[in-house]
Structure formats: structure tokens, C-alpha cells
Image (cartoon, helix red, strand yellow):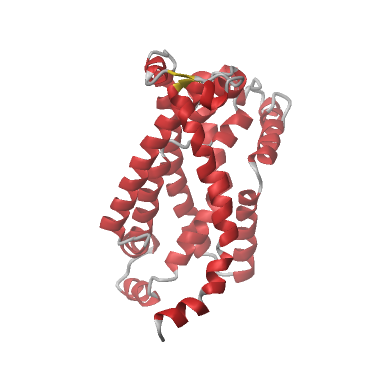
Length: 299
């Protein structure tokens, strides 16, 4: 088949890409013009073209803000805990589901676990606020046991761990699908041979199951490195309050308050640009590591 004929036959496929390309240009590349605000003293009345150019002054101002180091630390801490705990929790859940013999029961449990993944944090946050409120279900049970009720979402020491637990609860269903699919690639004969040799469940899991999942675990962990500065804006924004800013405030929520609430548009743009640059480096590093250790390539 000649090149011209192949291109002509593939023309409808290329035309199908046009709406997606247009949407990407408008919503992904168009807003990048606003990056200029990070180097300006942006005033909405003057616009981007009329605002004063200040160079790197906004970045110097950011470095002098006392809270910015705590915000960055909170972001990395929360995101790191989500990655580690979410991975362990999801693998354990997948291993338990894999041991269920009844196919109907297994599908039912998996569907129930997967359901929160389809709900937004606006809905889940409202549910969690009602459950964890002072007069909520959890505190009613605590009072029934004779203990004092606790304001869970107002406890700065407990709040980061609630974020990790609730994030794992929402995303566990999707993760189990990935690991269950990987488990199907492990040959059953390996388990049969191990059983004949007298290996119990723990030994079979340690010497067969986990090594069989090694490549997918390494792949997902390395790809997660690129999102280490994304601790979940929607989740934190719905659940946090000024009482937990010291441990729950992350870069995205800080940018939201600085840019939209306090109208510090240039400062917020500078923080967002710095975060984006670091994220690009981390994403590139994670894909390189995924290629080196898990033989994963994008193209």
C-alpha cells in the first residue's frame, strides 16, 4: 500500500482527532498565557498587557513567606503517605479478593469497593462531614462506649491521616482492578508446585504472588512520583478548615486562597508555575525510572 493511499484511508481517523485537539488547545494551552502574571504585578483593570513587569520579585516574595515551607512539607508528606499506604492497602485488598472462591460474591464485593471511585469529593466530603461530626455516627458510637466525642476534622494532628485513609477508601476499587488483572498472569502451576512442596498460603504469597506483582508495583510507584506535589486539592478543600491549616494546608489550597480569596494573582501564579516546573521534572524522572525498572514506555 502506497503512502498516499494509506494517508487517504486514515483521513477519517485524523479528522476524529480534531475536536480533541481543539479542546486541548483551548483548555490546556490557552490558559498558559496566564503564566506571564507570575512575572508581573498583575492588576485586573490593566490586564496582562498593561500590568507592570516585575521579573522575579514574586518568587523572592514567596521565599520570604514564613508559611510556605510548611505548606510544601504538608503537600509532600500527605502525598507520600497516600502513595505508600494506598499501595499497601490496595495490594492487600486485591490479594484478599483473589482468594474468594465464589465468583458472584467476588464481583459483588468488588463493585461495592469500586463505587466510591465514581463519586466526587463534593459528595464524599458531605458524607464524611456528617459521619465525623460531633453528633455524627462515629461520635455517637464513641459516646455509647463512654468516651468523650472528638472533633475529627478539627484535629490538626489527626487530619492528615484522615486524608490518607479516605483517599485510599475512594481509590482502592480502581487499584484492585489493576492488581487483580496482574494476578491473572501468574501461572497456577506455580501455586500447585509450591503446595506439593508443602508451602502454606503465606509462603506462596511471599515467594510467588508478590514477585509476580513486582513489575506492576514498581511501575505504579514510579509513575506516582510525578504526582508527589498533588496531594488532592478537591479532597482537602472540601474537608479542611482554618483549625487544621498547620498540617492540612497544601500548595493547591494555598494558591486558591492567595489567588482567588486574597486577590494576590501574581503570587498565586508564581507558586503555581514553580509547582508545575517541579512536577515536570518529577514526571520526567518517574517515566525514566519506569522505563529502566519496569520496561514501560509511552511511545
